[in-house]
Image 1 (cartoon, rainbow, N blue to C red):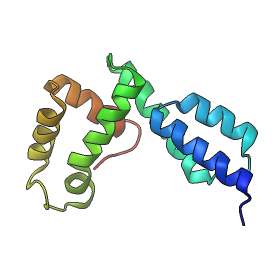
Image 2: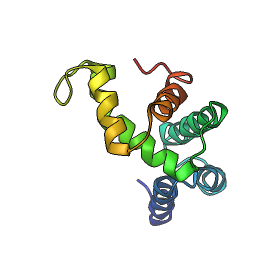
Image 3: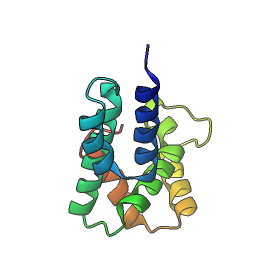
Length: 125
């Protein structure tokens, strides 16, 4: 059973991740929570860092916080149709990408950068 100190540390970790302070979340977690933070949470933060680094390599200009917001919106619009084939919101993948583009108010080049930043690290489809 987790102690009050461990629970507090987990909440701080989650807040840092939500704010986009990935480096702080990982560095402080390694010192404060070597055994209490589930390994998959740390791996998720590392993966998001890799996505952002790939985005920058592809020519992206957005800050880490803006990229994280766009990435979450990208997942919201495309995850079902791309990974599960569910057509609950969109009937095609192109419609999902267009919906994301319209919602995020970005151009097609930026849509491609965000998609490629994820797809180049881990296959999205």
